[in-house]
Image (cartoon, rainbow, N blue to C red; front, side, top):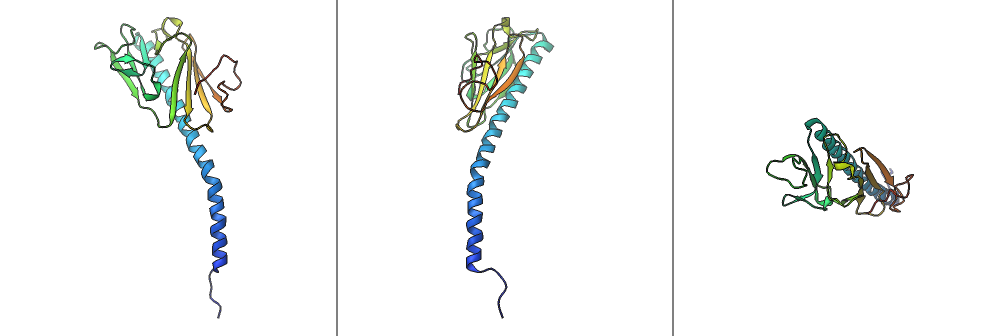
Amino acid sequence: MKGKGFSVIELMLVIAVSGILIAVAIPTFSTLLETNKVKSALFILQNQIQTARESAVFNNTTVTMCPLFQGRCTDLWSKGYSIFYDQNANRVFDPEDTMISQYDPLPEVTLLWNPVKNSNALQYDPTGTTHKANQNGTFSICSTRAFVPAYGVIINRQGRMWTGVDKDRDQYLDGQSSSRFIRC
């Protein structure tokens, strides 16, 4: 009587095919995870920018968004950033200022602020425009892995934002003018 089951050759064939399928799927899955991490950082940043703008308008005061180190704004955006009511618009978290929110960075995601004028902070006036209407610029959101698209969040002088993607990683947002430079 012949036994029911698999032969050693059939079992080895199934294991080999499974191994090939897994080897093909892992890089694709890894790319998906990295892309989702960058997109999450993008969505969080958009939400935080909108929070800063709305807080300035609703509370009729200047709101500052920047990375803080010892109470002062720095340019280390990838280390996290804070949003606070900046009563005197000096980009310093003074005792009379109030913290709105703080954001800790996602691992393996780089966030950079490239302002048109030299400023390490994004500030909104009570009208919802950028502070003195001259703090427009572009945020770059990039993965530390080169195969993941980079994203940009552009802030104009009126305080409005829009986003773009750099799928080919040439440091320019796809479909935008050459002035839409992002750095990773």
